[in-house]
Length: 284
Image (cartoon, rainbow, N blue to C red; front, top):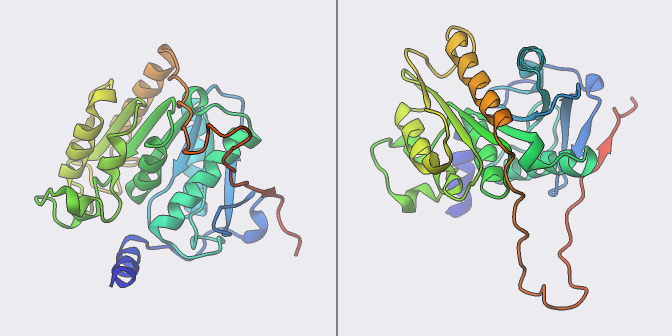
């Protein structure tokens, strides 16, 4: 029953489009800790902040590349975006668990491969279903900032916005539970006329993150789920710029405290860390 329910939820939550980019154009590949292979792109221009992008559920890297190329110049930020398992030219199948594994692989590459410090250099960005891996990472590590756009509070609160029961929240996509553990500065943006994820989800996310939400949340009047960046681009960009300006004007977050394991007292005992391989474009 549990596996059937999870499968049904994953089918409802994930809508991967046919790949909108060519496999031979991919120049960066990641392997997550479940053995899935993921394309990624990195817009690296030496700016002080890197936006780690988790895209929406009906997008792939080909759809968002042009937008984030523009945003890199407009906001003076570096950008790293990764594909989800089962999307684009990734292997594997889309699922909540795989998506979190994908996010871990992306973060590990930025930290181990590009020597970025999350609390100083990385701003998480998630839209729609992308707020799930973003909240997942935010609950595990400290970052320079976290931005959640058109996000869901939990799977149950998308389906039943007025039914706010924690036992239901924890079943799938428990973003509010993860944000409650986050100690990074947050910025939440949500359209008042969102027809996919009700605005109440944005209010619930803000309530969970309010202790670490330095600026007012952006409830963009009249905006729907998919027109924030276009029809309402002025309000969207104003909020984005204000948040980045605030982050750069304040001291970086403190590093994530080291987790103590059960056997850390044993001399030489150390937890192993999964590795992420980065490979060039495979030869045809």
